[in-house]
Image (cartoon, rainbow, N blue to C red; front, side):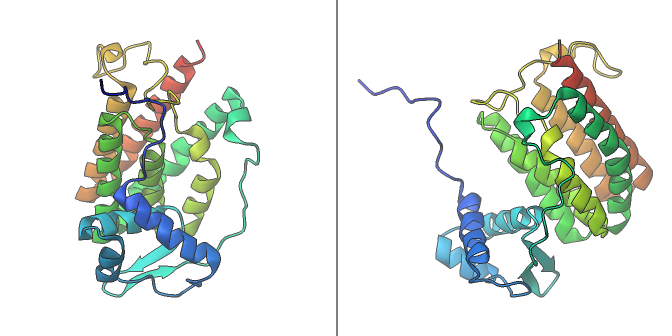
Length: 251
């Protein structure tokens, strides 16, 4: 009789995560130094036995983690480490709900403007990285994995696309503390939204992650079209809805 799989067992890292971990170790050990070029795609493909699309997803993760920058037609280069200037020094677990709601309020203004700027300034490579983050979010949700990493990566890539390093700095300080982790085992939301919102008469019938994915897609589509006003509005609606969802978990 086959042995039941333990749902709490740790999953093996994804293909792209193996590449991310390998490059990150080299950066942290000093093997790859600031401003040094990361091995090119063909070399990483051979080393990790993965496809080009996997390598590109890994590079987008390294970008979102602030470890590398990519110059079109040239390659990816290691970024100098930044001092830890987090606005909130307490671990996420001990942050009070009121603090998280206050940080989301700040993000409403910050990221709405960031989305508008990203619609005007994003590069094709940045747009592709955003789409890869959305695809990772969908995949992780469909397989029951946590979606925090892909969620945060999408928001940080938008901040990077503004071309203004301070958007990235502030988001890194507060972003992960306000992205819902849901159930520790499945990554699914602990509670659905409790009250209907315009355009969504029965949100209780839908997963909070599915709603988030739809909101992300609206932001992405506006940025892809270069529609700054719509990108700003879509991001504002997404974060405002996120705040409502967070408030719902208090009850």
